[in-house]
Image (tube, rainbow, N blue to C red; front, side, top):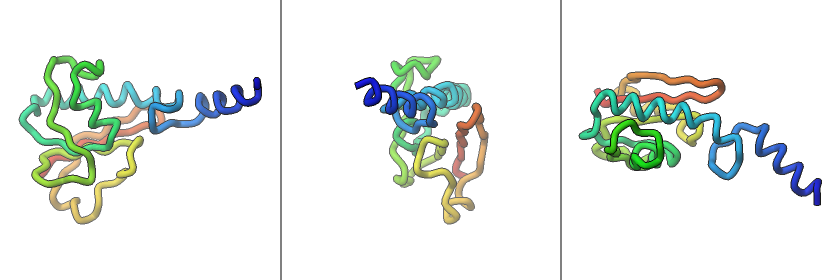
Length: 125
């Protein structure tokens, strides 16, 4: 019984996580908060965002603890880019690079880094 509990717990704590089903996910939480606060400081509430699952949740709901205001952002899941103003990529998602066909349509505004985690915000040109 001890082995059955200890081995998964060890890997959950020591391996970099991408989802909230393991303890490794906690390392990117400060980065996501920093990215949400940056968007709030730019007053981009009227913009439409596309992001991966973790950032969609962080951006939409001000009650998650990421926001400094009580407003959320209009955010949809990648790869939906129809009528999108801003794309957010981060190390927890499947999209780790902006596709070549979008590089002429979006510009990198800011890159965030925290230990092994990173995030990038692109705005439509």
